[in-house]
Length: 483
Image 1: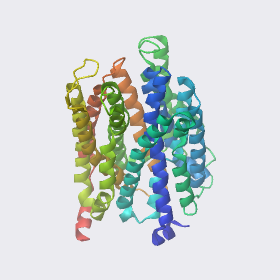
Image 2: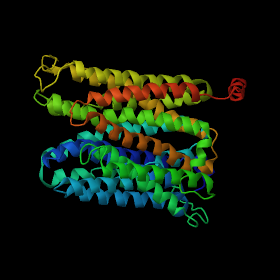
Image 3: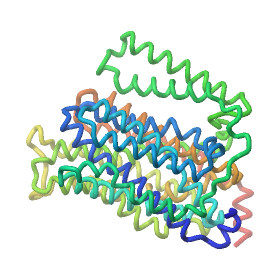
Image 4: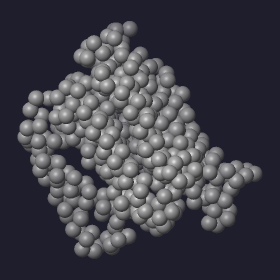
């Protein structure tokens, strides 16, 4: 089905297929945070939680810059199939791992698979609806993201608590959603291949990117744990990372058929959206991972501790679910006028949410036996729910409007490559933020350090948003005349 036909007929099978596929992907991403914390603890490998989480983000990050090129080679539909198969294989390996090394390897493999189709929702939806409707339907993607993010931890924790084979199957609990979604969008999913896309593929650029980013992530995560910062392994990793990334960037900018389309960053709207996506990802990482770890370390002795653990990020997703139904459509009706104020408010909500989470350090700790509580309800849980409710607003704004913003001046044929770079920003932020938190925390279990780091990064993000989230005077004037 052509793009024009899809837009005129408004294929609801494709639209709902995209949304269900995204629900399955989010179940995988958010559910794994719950199972990983418990399973690494059972393996007596708690100290490797941050490293394992970073490896999953690293895998997706390595795939995303080349997804646009891979789409041209294999076709979107075939790439989704490949992603689902690889993701499932990695999760099966996690199911049957008894030690943390193969477990981490499985998490890395499933991240590679997830990276193959994590951009599919926005790319397919952008082709299925008219450009002026994009914020509205991107808002529906935010709703699907919230549903998957809520269902994932609850479903996985419920299945894990049953023990036996049911607990193992929790790792592939996302598969039914992914398969149903894919079947629904099968006929309407674009699968065009770009003639000659496989010729002249820049393998040196791809390899040097993989080597450079991998060395950098390993250095940040293993430094001062498996080797000292000033030791020979540390120095070698830094030298290799810097040399490989410098070569990669220089090459990708110069050659005509790059594996990683860095030249797209000449589009300032994509660049500022990329930065905005990074800040949103930092906040989301805190919500998805570090609030859960904070609850586990501080509220395990309280009645209802399991409920607290399962609902740590719940308010973020409830707000996203509600606002996603109408906020994108509301902004999209007067996008040029409404985007900037809502985008700035969204960034501000991340700052406020991170600041509230940082205040958890003043509510006492289980280790010291001075946790502040109102009856059996820890004050810290109230702060977490409040922070997640406020941050949920920014979560919805970023998912609904950032892609629509950079797509306003991007040719349709370049959207797959642009979306892969945009999503790369999210994964890169999650990966390196996890590594940064590992460095800042060392052997500490005080996860408010992560919330403080998120606060500082989101403040910088607001500054970039003020500078870059704007339209030209000509576009504003044209929008006023169009009323």
